[in-house]
Image (cartoon, rainbow, N blue to C red; front, side):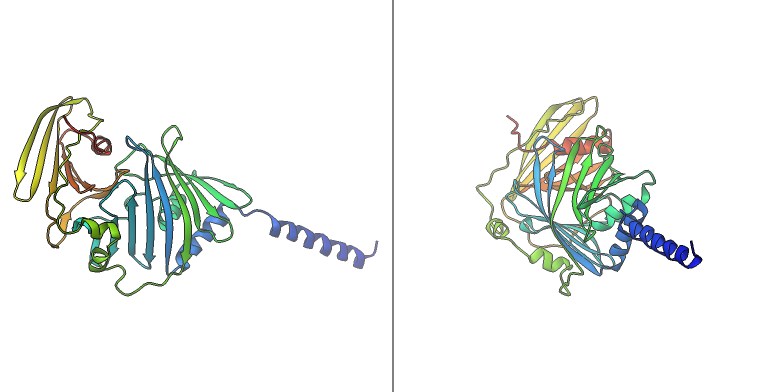
Length: 340
């Protein structure tokens, strides 16, 4: 065989091998690099998703509207179909981190490094960072999706240690996220219905004033006077070995407060309060702590106290003896069971 012909065969074979490599599936490292490039190149994004949670007494569903603008501006609006008092907004801007409940004219300012301090199953950055941090992450591919199985980083909840993340192969945007318990049961699922890269924003889209003023029909219906809406005192179904020792009701100038004292293996107090007339807009109440999704609403966790609002009722759960996980479990189980 002539040298010229052998050279020709070698070139054809080399081209064939290159073609096979080019048509082959990407490796885990390739996909992670692509995800990081996509994240770094985006000036911002808008996404819509539905989050289902099975972490309390009843399954809960949230509609989530997610906005992010580079570098560090976030707006996550969560609407629970079971909460008649409108949506909550987690907002991060140059002034800090806030949790807003526009319908109730309530706003909290958090001294927190959210969203970096914990896994966030609906934020692109958090998903990519969790994959990058987990050196034991598992990877597989289907015809349409790249799938990563990783550890999570929920500092205040050790009951959700794993997650499974599905990305669309073409766009490299998230499609579905499942957060799993220790037995690999799915307790939280986020399904994305849309994801817009390089979205545009108005100058004040991340301002607290605009987001507090933004109202839905539900918000408008409950603003102003909310009388004829009596306080229904609720008992948690998870008691951490304690029992209800005392229930005390107090009349306020514009509402009612109930103080429930629990004693037993671990003692705690649960305060529930409802106002007849909504307060006027005021400066945000400052909280030094973490933002916690209870499954039916968003709460603020600081020291040994958990605060949240649901269906027009304000709750404060406090204990020097419950762990953070137990505080969360008690709070998750307070969902409308009336105390007789």
